Length: 73
Image 1 (cartoon, rainbow, N blue to C red):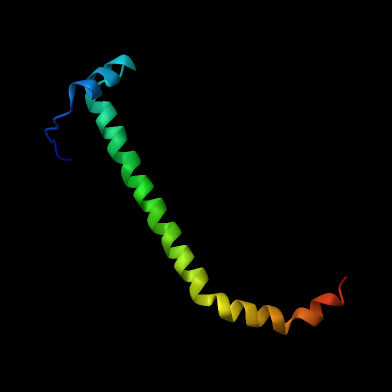
Image 2 (tube, rainbow, N blue to C red):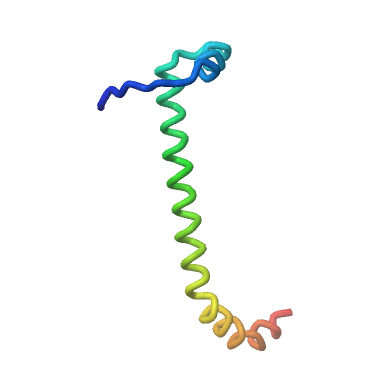
């Protein structure tokens, strides 16, 4: 673990104090949340890319089984 120095504007410090949190805890949680959000965004982008890459093949497979599935109705 590493300690870093962080400079924040006065309104940000006032807000953190208004919600009665220690600045260190607030900053740690904010950084962790930002990192988690970045991971989720990257995962969504990868999933989207994967779905788009296989879309044509998926449609062809679906069309191949179109009439086989209609017998189950």
